[in-house]
Length: 163
Image (cartoon, rainbow, N blue to C red; front, side, top):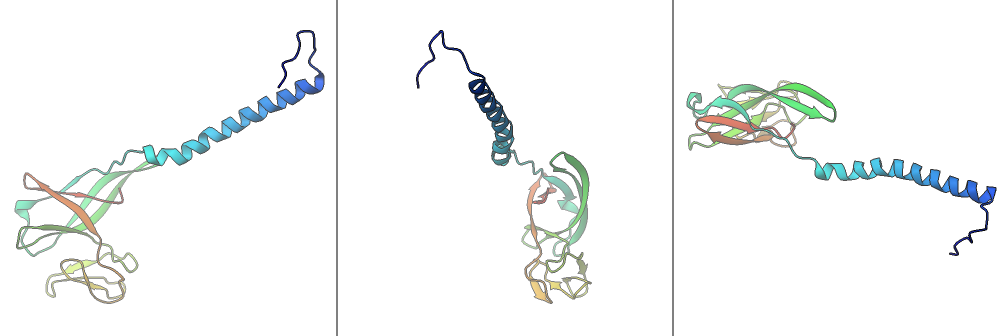
């Protein structure tokens, strides 16, 4: 590419061509930066799944699910909302703790614990689950969803994957 000589003047055509190139470059940059940010932002986003205290371990009876309702703040883009959910917490005879969602995996109806049959039952289509959340009868395609659980100082905490 040759440099113009000092006495050479810039033609009107060359001026407009250069101006269009500058405007096109600025438009491309203006559209490209948000597009790149759209693809990179999820990798930089910090997960904020907090542990939620839901029950006292000392108040739990072994082999008997306790229905608990918990609340957390859900962040979805710019929107923040308080969300309430229900889960069943089971203290097993060996001391292990299991937390299960109360949503049937067939169509999402709320399951209930039937103490006489010792099973979770879904009123919508007859789904039946054992105390571990495994399907024993009906149309549900998979077991009840398990939540992450930890115990600290006799408090049971869960981490909801949907937070």
